[in-house]
Length: 217
Image (tube, rainbow, N blue to C red):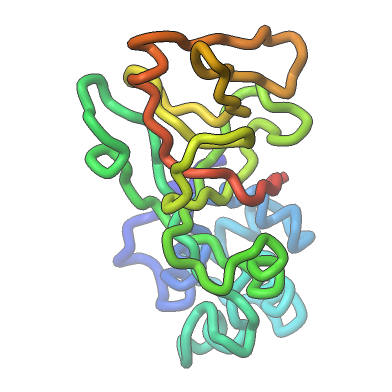
């Protein structure tokens, strides 16, 4: 189910907050986490306020402060909630685009736990971005539809999982520098490794290193 929603004029402020918290996450994913029907989730998007218990579960599923969701007071990702916001980007690149910055469009934000951020070696969210993975080439490490947190400031090529651009395509794979080029490897063994040499290797542009991945299902 998409995040398409009714005319904003028909929503209440509560519905606006639900839509803002959803970001790019499908409504049916949140409905499953909360334990309500897709129809009920659609009604929350339209502005119907749930009871206290479901309201708390909804806030938890969305990763936002329950007080903010219920009343609009404070901030969606208050420090007391232990979250920081990381931007989510639509990273499908158009033909002829020269760089990620020219093509990336922010489509939402993901609340990211401060403790988990520390676990991956970061004190803050500066320079982090969330991409949505597509396909099964990195299964089981990165599943289709998973969110991948990428450090846009870490662009030094060495062995690891990176978001990178080849031609007009953005990819997330394992990279390794070789004497005669760059090896691109998938975790799914049905996909053979690739070797870029010469001009092709020079054209590879690293977007950032993958720090964390999590499924939205």
